[in-house]
Length: 128
Figure 1 (cartoon, rainbow, N blue to C red):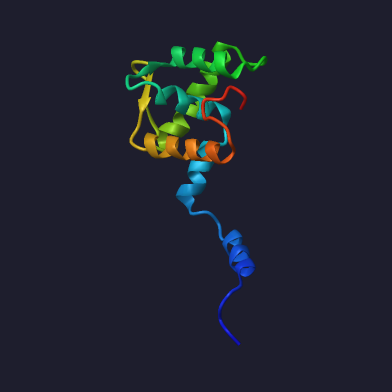
Figure 2 (tube, rainbow, N blue to C red; figure 1 turned 90 degrees about the vertical axis):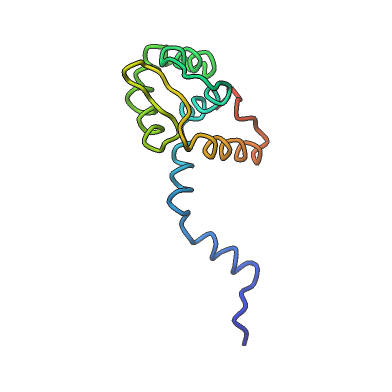
């Protein structure tokens, strides 16, 4: 009798293992369309963007009939920006009302790009 696992057993064992917490954390960050859209907006710029400007971009991109720019801004300030800031994906300056890339931005955006590539989608799609 051998101790070697078959391919099916190896695949099943891999599926039974939980994701490492940092991988799970990144995918949790990317599970919201607003947060993905924030990354796309920041990927196109090196300078900070105002929260109002960011809300306007998201309002135009996501074309969600329920949300207007004011509602999006509230969502950004209370849900999405603090979560991305806590993960060092962005820097949120409450004094100036601006957002810029954080130290973990590149790694997180690369994960978004690769995931979209696997799904044959572009990260800057407007159809989240």
